[in-house]
Image (cartoon, rainbow, N blue to C red; front, side, top):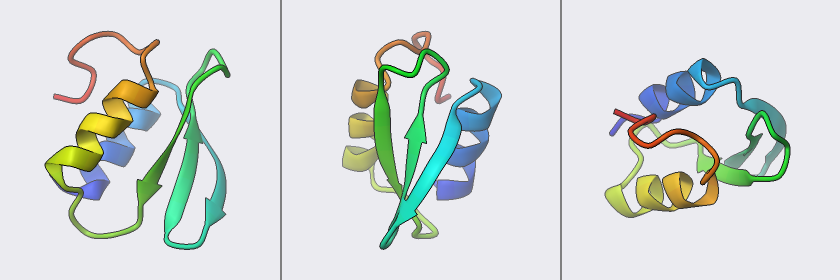
Length: 65
């Protein structure tokens, strides 16, 4: 999956970019309790996508489709 698609889905679900740390961007969900790191590569691997979905557990199921 492209990182651009992941970022669009995060913005669509009202997540906010809180910082850039090295090769990753830190995103926080709208409730403020969950956060995740998204790599700044052109493609995001399946395992990383799975971790992002797990980290942002408050978002509705299927938000990253």
